[in-house]
Length: 207
Image (cartoon, rainbow, N blue to C red):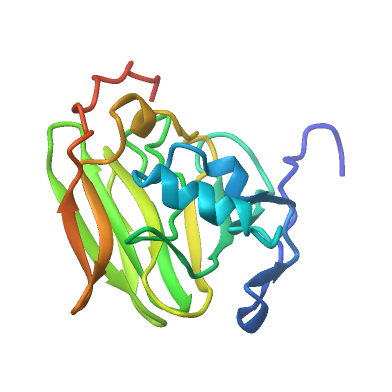
């Protein structure tokens, strides 16, 4: 190859170990423990009890593959969320909106049963249940959070633009999401969060 010839990223093979909620061939991984989620659940007494009896296992973990950067690049990965409840709220991820809010994301159910809770800054809410074989397209400008409403680990394959970025504080600044996913006779239900103060406008990121 000469200096004038283009240099391309090397194609990658990814293997998803569904039973283990893991991916082989990724380039990154992070884990979140219950202690990292202080302030996420409304029932603080139930959270303190759960923390006191916590077994030290991750609440959820994420593995990613990003083989190139910049315009047009994709990040692909797997997110696995263990089952559980704190009070009547189901186990959940922190949730985020993309730093470049116009960027969309795809989630595809691999195992377990979960809910993708989505909200816009102007107050719209959607909640779509995800089971194996079900995909949810999260459009740009939607805050989104995964919730495990089942009894086994909930794993999804996801894909988003590598340069999308994540704003994880948008929810905390608003006093939590506008809706809570809680236990119900019909498995789960949405309940209004009385602490929610409304979302602040975001700074517009460069496209």
